[in-house]
Image (cartoon, rainbow, N blue to C red; front, side, top):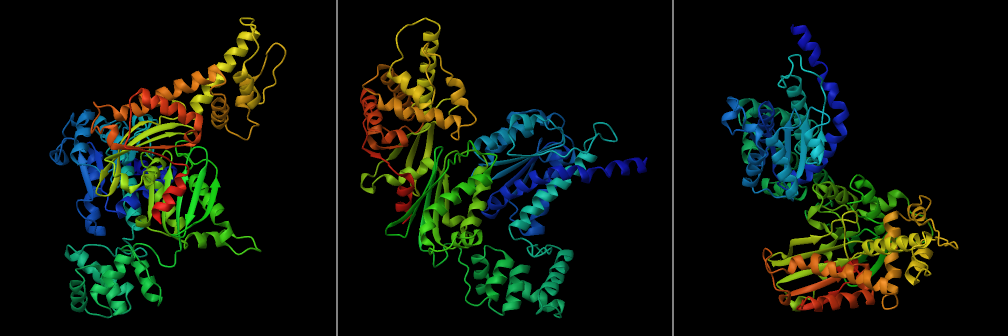
Amino acid sequence: MCTVINADDHLVPDSVVPCLPAIAGAIDALTPRVRRGGRVVYVGAGTSGRLGILDASEIPPTFAAPRSQFIGLIAGGDDAIRQAQEGAEDNEEVGKAEMKQLNLDPEVDSIIGIASSGRTPYVMGCLAFAQRLGCVTIGVVCAAPSAIGSAGIADFLIAPLPGPEVVTGSTRLKAGTVTKLVLNMLSTGTMVRTGKTYGNMMVDLVASNLKLKQRSRNILRRLSSKCHSLPDEDLDALLSRCNHSVKLAILVADTGESVEACEGYFEAAGGVLANAIAAVSKPGQQITPEVKSGRPFVLCIDGGGTKCAAAVTNGANIVCRGYAGPCNLTDSIKNLDGVVATLLEATKSALKDQFPSGRDQTDSDWKNYLQSCFSSVWIGLAGLDRAGVKGLLAPKLGEAFGLNHTAIQLTNDVDLLTAAVPGELEPSSILVLIAGTGSVAMRYSQSREGYTRVARSGGWGHMLGDEGGGYAIGLKAIQHTLGVFEEITLGIQTREPGRLEQAVAAKLGCPVSENAGIDMLNEILASKCTQGVKARIASIAELVLGLIGEDKTADSIVNCQVAVLIGKTLGRLVNSKGTDYQPSETSVLVLAGGLMKNERYRAVLERQLDQHRLYFRGTVVVEDAALTGAKYLS
């Protein structure tokens, strides 16, 4: 019997191998959040819950993490740790309620939901609540497919499949073992990445018992040449002076400097021993926690669905501009490295004239330059509100620009626009209305930190409807044109195609035969076209706007689209029944996006605002969001 069980257990480690990319991605997401003090909450029921509590409870003594930073919750409460509370796991609402009580901060907190079956209601409730809030969510399951995976409530789904249990259905066996392996890897990997180790040594442990006190001495003797031959009494005295911090004791011993000075090195090095040692060992090298010296420029990037625009200033003047392709995270959620590459392409485009002429720049040249030339960076990205994305992008961008999180602002692209409001207006709130490829409205309220986004309306994406945007206008024009040509072909109407229909057909490159037969669908969807379908449809908006006042159908399309944009998208944010309502008269309206630059479109919009009796403290039209953000930074 023991041989059979042991042979079955040998299958467990190999089942983790296919999950390594997902585990690595989860560690990448957790690391910057944990480094900033974010909490990691483990949730589970039964054995899964106990394993989460075990991992959470072992991290503080092993890596000197605050006990409140790693939290383990089990369905049924603490009583369920020792005695099974059957049925406690069956209520999603209980999970949601427990998450609500934690007052989660979506900017830094993360949830690990553990459910061998992949369908535990308590765990699903926890994950759903946390993801809706914007936290990073990680699912650890032993089933595929699983309800957690199908529901899309885990940003990272880790699903090792160790196979049937030797005792059917007893998930405390192989499923429990593989869950422990995954949790070990998640927590250990995160702690290593945050600098809690030096090599393979636990330099951040808390010497809370005799075993760990001896381990602290052993680490000092192994890593510090000055401590190699010291007796226990001297090592204990050193540790006592250093508040029992092993890594601080190593730096104090090796440098001979005061505890206070070495604490300063650690603060500047982000608490990482390797970085502190490197700084101290190289005379003249300074590590600062905020902005590195000798960085002449600030950078702002507006990453939208049509293009990515970069503006660079030296504090007094706009030095250069650059552009790259579209950069909407909603369309690129599975290719974040591609998003980073596009952002860097726009930056390089802006900086190309800063290099001496006469030779091409190597990848190494660019890497070194980008990591040393910016004192601060503000990147506004369309689609950044997607759960977990910010936590994944921030470390990649920090590495690319050689800056820590205090010098990089990573926000939704709409947030850039608040910088355009003149300070003398001092509005109680700012309403931002965007009409580009898509459309969205957002409201910002004044706070001590500036203006904070408090409400959003629209911005559902082109598939669900961004009324008033270029895609929606282009789509309506194409639908109308298709209908007209079909009716002519079928003999339902005999009139010639109008100006709008002819213009749309010409724009799409569709030849019109004598019987008005065209192959417009093929032209729109043609794979040979370098422009994507979404962009092709949105490009039709320009010709529709050009026919305002000259073609009744064009007038109707634009009027109807703008009516929805004002009456619904913006209207929800100025409705007196809304939460935290602010009268429009006390707010500044910021207009942005490609369509807002069109005078005919703006004239229609202004008429609609008058019809809805919406009057504002001031109206600002933003021509260039990247330029606006760069000026604000400088």
